[in-house]
Image (cartoon, rainbow, N blue to C red):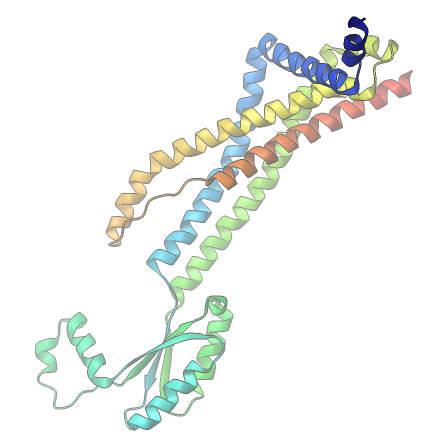
Length: 318
């Protein structure tokens, strides 16, 4: 009496689904072991395809971080006319602060600018020979984060030059323009390599799945003849594509960490020349998880396209 309910439970939806999942994964692992050399070669090729854009992304991310550390912001130095009174100077500084693009303004009086010049120039003895202070007061303008663009900064410079009491406004943005061009170039390379990576991974996984289908075409035909569903036939190949993508992504992350470890000491020596300490940062957990999920999804999609195309061809021939 107790055997019938147990047999009925084994024929339920979830037990059958569990057995099919186990059967599919068993086929994946068996095929991987039987063709270990070809499987490892496929995984290596995919891993290298993922590693190249990952390294470029790490370089782009660290270049941006180094730029903020070494060059925190492009400032505008406004030179104030010497004949302004204290009240007029305060009104001028307040007017500069009222601009929407301005984050803050640091005012240095004529005495303060002279002291700064004496401290950094090395001409303190020569300055003692002067009868009066030749330096003007300055207002150092720090733009807001959203205003740190070449076009906006030059427009702000033109607006400050129109203010009464401003002799000149200097914007040393040559390094900023070069740095923006450099980071833009690296970003373009990252996106280009990422697109090429997606294409390469899709082609490699698709070709690997096609070879598996060709090797097991007779088995697939027999399964179709005995009434196997399309999902049952597709499942082992889909899991194989996912498995290749997953293992390749993990291997690519290991290669990326090895790259970071190798060049970190070199970057540290270079940064010490600039009087700072900078360490290369690797991928965060979120970034690593994204790469793994993306590679797994590409593997699944490539396997689905290749298998689906084969089944359509067989149905047309039949």
